[in-house]
Length: 217
Image (spheres, helix red, strand yellow):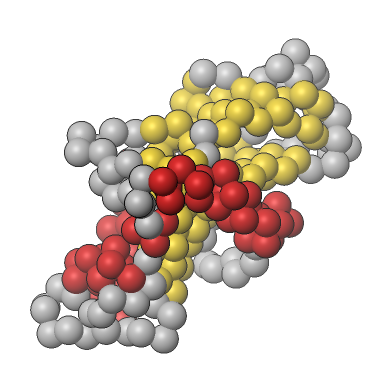
């Protein structure tokens, strides 16, 4: 099942988030003669509701990194990416996400459940070529009954850590829910050890959801 919509915080991020990241990091990168076009962009949106925590991640691959991924998709090496090859690639992505995306609540690991199938957008360039593409993932976790004021939510990821990443994070809470976020967004250099890094940590500052009777901590 595909749910092809963006949450309010993700829409706001798509309009404003990359501008903020560029403003913060463009100057240091210019001084280091580093092109931001080398970086895969990873935008993460965390949405906390009374019953579920939704996680939506979009990877935007620039031309050079896209070419490397397209070569992986093209299993028969004919220079074309078929629907069958796309399905196989996305199945692999989903398997990796199940291993390398990890959420913890109050320091305890919680299962992440697929919310929809991964969505691949080759942007009208279906072959093996240096052309940008995007990949979207969506999953969710159940909110435990003990969740309340002072509870923490953390998300770690090992996806594409072997590539240079530009990470930006946005969060939102349903009515009556407010989060204080400690994001780790910014530029990340490639890791050769396959490390998993903390994307975001948020603490619940208000927990009064209308449809939930959880007590505050």
